[in-house]
Structure formats: structure tokens, C-alpha cells
Image 1 (cartoon, chains in turn purple, orange):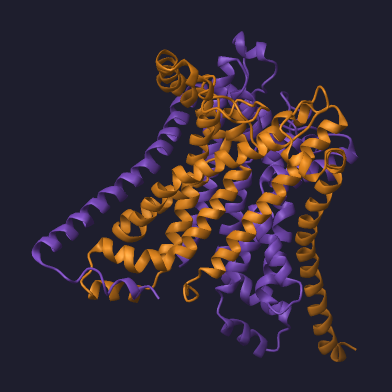
Image 2 (tube, rainbow over the protein chains, first blue to last red):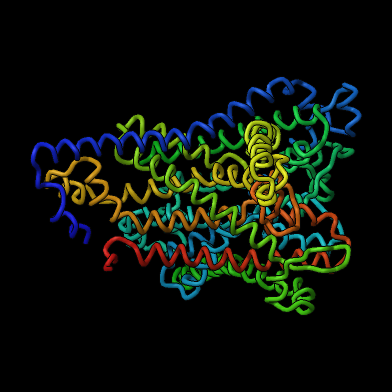
Length: 302
Length: 317
């Protein structure tokens, strides 16, 4: 299949020919290394910029005060992103609560009931949804939830993010369950357990690290999305009247870090730019920590 | 009574369980279909007024006079995505080869972690770097010098360079390339890792050098996965919203200049959505969403088809 070109190729070697081949080998290695640097260096520069520019704005006020109007920042009064941090937590966790049961259910269906008639369609549509731009998921929730309810709300944002997470969780679940050997299922069935008990009691525990990793990666991916939130949860410069009540974020327009970062970055105020960088640090940390925990879980298990 | 139930109870349990799973599966299906249906319904007005292809190929987008054509944004999306993929493909392939073939195990592990982490950098974070660092830098050090140089030597050529404000087609493309490069790398790396060892050993046994092993045995075998990965990255670039919206300068004119402002389908949706007070304007944005949906659909199905068609064992020319 791939050997057809070898016959005319490399083995016909006099000294000069061999030297040329080794030279080409070296040159190619050099190119590979150069290409790798071209990828890694700019991206690491970005990370370095975010950290070095944002650190100065990361103080106590940043986590405890809300943003308020631009004059607050310009005149040096205390200002922060407490409303965006709280909003992010509420909106993202609600999204997770919606997406996990549905995503795991769909993944289970794909892996454990392979013969089911719905599966070919489900697989294609799930992969398609995974590749759909997140902004379209925002448009969908805008049409289905925001417009009928007459208000932007954190809950609408959660639903949009849940649609971002769903296909990732379903795919990861399918993958993790497929890795579980059939002998485990057979052992369970031989004990006389019904199929659903076998899946929940024998298969699921074995696949759990893979499942958790899938959920965490889906969370990290959704936590960085700003576009769908701009169309659904809109944003807000202030903490709600009762900042400890999650419903205050879910029922009204709510702020989130990625969408706030965008608004800060495109604003004309230098103080807000600094806060934008700081929001970038927090966002990067959130994503990176969730992601690393997810990866470490599977690494240890395989 | 209890003694009689196990068999029935089991069947009921299985039925209920499968029923619940079917509901979750159906909701995924329903979301996908709803997306197509709502976009189609909400975009009905501009499409019926200008025609499906008339709206697609219309070159004027003017909310004030109620003229809407999607072509500037379709073209902007295609140009930036193709250019970003072209820019990022070879470097991504290089890094994938380094990690999968050359690097010792410890280094490969580190590279893989870094690549996966870079792939998780949120779009807005690259966006703030682009808007506050890269764009001003490019404007002062590259665009303006080039623009002035051209203005001096060949003033009639300056038109297609466009206004060198820093926010425009090239800047957006560069950042878009940075966005998708870790993703392309990860997919190419996984495809290369899947090549069986025997494949490599056969080439080594013929006396091939390392590069020849790669070129003759590894890359041809992995090309299905690599190509499908590139198509998926292209799909990702098409839908990438925030970084592009922050850097492309947002102009509804046809993107015919190098440095000048332009717009893409996602960027125009996110920029104009909140200002779209008129129902036709909003419907036109929905229409752009519909085209974006259709293009993404085609690209995703193409990637899935490529993966199956070019899969190892099915390579036949």
C-alpha cells in the first residue's frame, strides 16, 4: 500500500549518494525543529504577555468589587470583576448540570446499545454539533429562550454553554465505555443482573476516569467561550442585590469572564485594559487547571 | 408477589433505562434539527426578499437603506480561514512529527501537554493580546512602513494595500492561524501515532534514513487522518468568532485589500446583533447564521467522509 515507491528509492547507494541522503535527513530535522518553534514560541509569548500584563491588576479589589461605570476605574476608585467571577461560576456550573446527564446518556446509548436504530443518526449529528461554531448555539438559544422570555438571562447562557459541552461529553463517554472489555459485561450478565444494572454497576465504574476527563475537557472548552454568551446572558457591570443567591444570576442578565474580557479589551480605557489582562489570567488559570486535572486522571489510569 | 416479579421487573428496568437513554439521544438529535429549523425560519424574510442565492451573493450590506447581501462576510470568512490553514498547516505538521517521531519520550510528553494546553487557550485571550499588542506592533513596524514605501514608489498600487490601521484582514488571519495551529497539531500527531510499528520497521529494514522512513512509510499511511484533521481545523477557523471580531476591523465592504478592515460571518453576527433593532436586519444576521451553518455542515461531513475514505487499509488509489 505504501511500499510502492521504495523500490526505486533509497537503497542504491554509492558514497556520495549516501551522504546526500544523510544531509537531506539532517536538513529535514532542522526544518521540523524550526516549524515546531514557529508554533510554540508565539503562543508562549501570548501566555507570557497575559501573565505579565495582568498581574498588577490582580489585587483584593479585583475579586471583591464589581466593575461599575468606567469613571470608577478612571478616577481610581475601587473596582473589580467580582460580578463576572461569580457569574462565571454560576453559569458554567449550571451548564454542566444540564449537559452531564444528557451527554453521558447519549454516549451510553452509542456505546452500550450499538444495535439501536437511532445510533447512526445520533452519531453523525453529535459529531456535526461538535463542529458547529459556538456562536450558532448562542443564536439557537436566543431564538428559543431569550426572545420568548423577553429577557437576557444567565440561564439562557447556561443552556448555550450546555450545547457546547454536550457533544464533547457524549463522544468522550462513548470512547471511555468502548474501552471497557466485553468480558466485564458478560460476567455481570452471567450473574443474572439485568443489562441496566450491569452498565451502571460494572461498566460505569471502570470507565469513570475517562468519563470525568471528558466532562472536564468539555467544561474547559465551554468556560472559554464568549460568543454564545454575548447573545444570551449579555453581561452586567454590577453585582446583583443579593450576590450570594445563584438565582439572581440565572434569571437576569449575568456577567461572565470571557464575555467581560471582550468588552474590557475593546473599551477605550487603559484601566479597563489592565483589568482585561487580569481577567485573562483568571480565565487561563481556570481552563488550565481544569484541563490538567482531567488529563492527569486518564494518564494515571492507562 | 415479590417472587413472581424478577423476570418482569428486569424487563421493566431495562425498558425504563433504555427509554431514558433514548430521550437523551433524541434530545441531541432534536438540538441539531432545531438549529437548522430555527435558522431557516428566522432567515426567511431576507431570503424571500433577495432570493437564496441573491442574498448569498449580494455585495451590499447596508442596514440603513435595508439592503442586505452576505457575500462580503462569506468571502471574508473563506479568505481568512483558507489563509490561516495555509499558514498553520506545515508548522503544525512539523511539530506533530517532532512529537510523534523524533522526540524522546519525556520530551514528547511535555510537548503533548503544552500543545493540548495551548489548544485550550480561550479565543478572547488571544484576542486581547492581538488588539493591545500585535495589532499596534504590526501597524507601526510593518504595515505603515510598507504602505509609505509603496506610496513613494508606486502610488497607484496603494489602493489594494488598504488602510494600515493595524486592524484588518492580515492581523485577523495571523491570530486565527495561531488559534487553530495547536488543534491541527494534535490531530496530525494522533494520526501519526496510529501508524503501526511494522510499517516503520519495514522501511528501516530497507536501509532508509529517518526522513525516508517518514516520507515513505509513515506520512502516506497517516495522510487520511492528517487531511481530515486539517479539514476539521478549517471548520474550526470558519466558526472562530471572538479573536477575529476583535481584530478584523469590521467593515461590510468586500475584503479586497490586504491591510484594510473586513468582516467574517461570525464576526458580523456578534458585532451587529445587539444593535440590530430592525427586524429585517436581525433576520439578515440570522440568514448569515444559516449560511455559516450550511458551510460548517459541509466541512464537517467532508472531514468525516475523508477520515473513513482515507483510513489505513482503505487507501487504494
